[in-house]
Figure 1 (cartoon, rainbow, N blue to C red):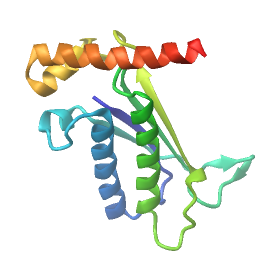
Figure 2 (figure 1 turned 45 degrees about the vertical axis):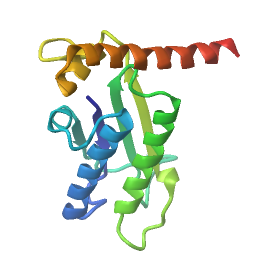
Figure 3 (figure 1 turned 60 degrees about the vertical axis):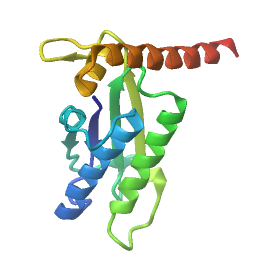
Length: 166
């Protein structure tokens, strides 16, 4: 159930290029979260909110080239270190690949924030939705959903504890 807040300045892309980019970003979100982008149920809960800043300023001066901010939100457990690094790199490349020819390819103009919403705080359909609930929805199997959630949450917990052990 990935969500993406994509801040793409007005006029940064041609309409058709942007349409293809949004589709590609959706696929990448699903892939790096661990879902099959061809799974229609998974696709139905992958949302992209497109924000249109009129302008972006750098050091108080209007930027001469577009700047992009992508804020990825997924339920806790879906992004371990490898997935987090992968999604940041993949989304950055997708933005740069979609830009018009002749624009300087500069990854420093793309910022990606890959965030996990703590277990038990994701809300949808008027209730709190846990990772096991989402996995059950996508797989159609409660037991598989619970196993997935247990495994993914344990991985993220172990990574977090390793940081504090250093």
